[in-house]
Image 1 (cartoon, rainbow, N blue to C red):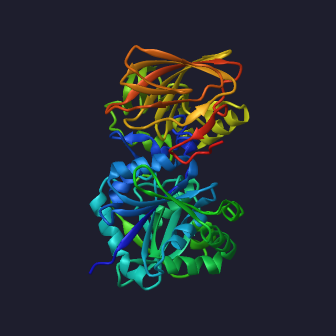
Image 2 (cartoon, rainbow, N blue to C red):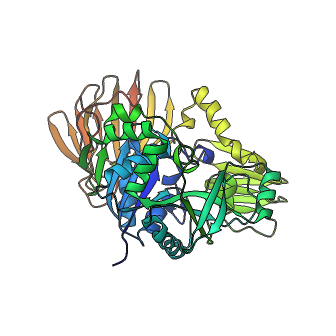
Image 3 (cartoon, helix red, strand yellow):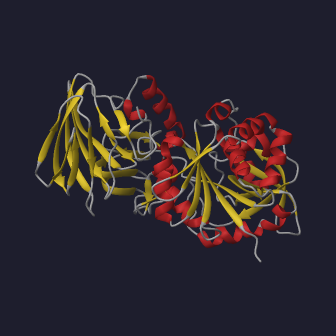
Length: 474
């Protein structure tokens, strides 16, 4: 019988390098970047070749985005919800502790990589099983195609009889001259951060190299809470206090760079960590001038320029080597050489208190979405979409009143003691302090326009009395 490999998807990244498309509230792994699918969904579909039973480690705030992606990819399993980000060492530790069998093979994959050839990837992973079964931690290195300064490198040593190579050392991201030197030496691969080992092997390595991280994660996993989400996937919540006390370290720094017995198996297929706008641009085919255009972009007398314009026409004229990214509420223009510095802009926007640093105008919710169309002194206008069968929480507001106008579908409205239906072009009014709920009883998406008015319109002016999605009530 073939060895069973359980994929573990590490989904905790913030994705600020792809701002303004990716933001902390909606990181790049959830953005539909390729063929209308998110990188997380593509990752889940890719590992499903090996096993449809997966474990995802993600942030609490993203639990329903994860559940939706799992349902769309047709995979089963659970999501471990981190109460706070603690980097990959803690994420991998809680995943290994969640696995009851110490001999179980775990494949750790980032959620935000793009590997088009799923079959070749699965075949490469299976080549690492023999080494993993003998107690090694197997890493999958990407055969480099150019001297990149954006990736770390792995220096390979002697070839093994099981198809892998001994790892000599991990090398931090080099400068351009060092990268060229490494490539010319012919003994390096890019570090993709993909690992295969048994749960027991990883826990033993953590005990040797990062015992404090392992101890904190053991304490957190000793008192987990579980629930079943609306899509049927399990949510596993480690105890917050010990997990948040855990030191934040990458698995490379905490374990892999120190561990004896690392084995590398090379992957020769196409791979991208989609880690910068240059990497995103490279996913599109260039025209005769080297321009790469998505959506409604237009380029004239320009060269080697990328335009991302899904919402409206964006034109560039007489420019070279630019990246132009347009979203509904923010625009980024930068030189290709500055693609690795986008997070500096995000840091500045956060310092200035700009909401665009963290959230999109259109925000995903477990019941659907809302889009803030306009806002001003004492008013705010939103489009709200509610999935079939879904409902918002039973709630009230202390500071605002709301007008609802149905523009598509049918709404079931709870307003105080009343419960009634509204069809398209019908409306209702929710006074300040009145308990209310919006539900979609139909088979198609419900869309309404909500007009808020009042002295304070923040999202924290919501008192939830009942909620189907496990959010705070009271």
